[in-house]
Image (tube, rainbow, N blue to C red; front, side):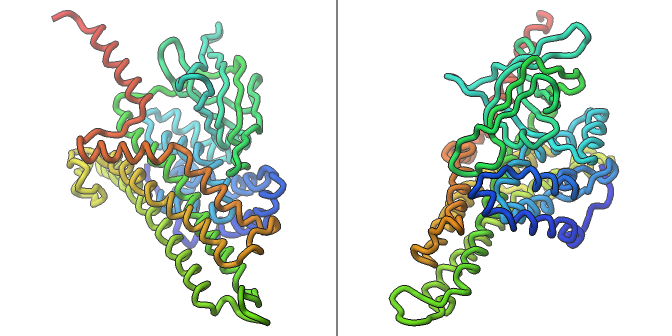
Length: 436
């Protein structure tokens, strides 16, 4: 996949005005809990969902670093929106990497025309697992039934990717959100990120075409590591956007003020060294968070660079040493597998720092204004509530443990369902092998 991508200036010109419109209504949406259907529509019209679709398929062809930078800016406008689009960008990345050209062409055509893809994987129950099922219809199609929760972005999407079992095999399935039998509920009751559309999705014998069933291939298993990294990176981009918004709102709060605690008469808090110190700290926290997230994006870009060498140069997989994007802790290896691992490790490492950094900023914000900063009219509390809610996704304590196990024992942090799928296939292959 090739084709010249856009410049940063072109992207800023295209999406900057949209972000400004979105930011203008963010406080009102927060206070009234108005779902951002219009705002998602503006992004669709501008082609935001096609950022990572290659130019030759009708997309914009932006790099991952450019995309993440835009997600940070969008997060500063409204942190709900990057998270609402998280499943969409992960789906696009999966189609970029598939060996199925027909599937890639179909989905890129739809996405370039404005389609968005939601994500509905998790289920509620006494055990973690998948109970949603696929059943064969008589006409060659399949019927999908099951109930999913945390269906982030699905309420705004045209399609939704979910997990279901066909017999004993766990599969990914893409269904139309407007198909008969699909019900989308806005019942997410979290205290933050309340407009992400993360409620329940019910599938009741929903017709699915066989071409819209996706199997994990053995050669794609290592690539799933970087898809997991992307999921985390989008969340961290929303967090970095919150840190940027905190700095913006602190400056906007302090600059016009003409009174300070303990100072009689008129005063200028913006000249107070204590207030300046707080704002300086907020500036540093925002910079740190953004820098770490963009560093992870660079690791994801290295995967694209390796693929370009493979598919365009005809040289086979690029040696890791040529790409300068793999830390010393990742074993050197011929091919791109180490790049996917490096991206996942970097995402987990960044998560450990970005989360407390942004949470500190969202609390420190209130040191610049006293009780007046708690006014519901300003809704400054949304920054902490949203950051705290994002930070609960895929809890960082587990990522920290996985990092330690990796550093000490070389254990790769692969998703449990990937391990399960590959283990089952290995067992099936062993069972099918002829006796020696």
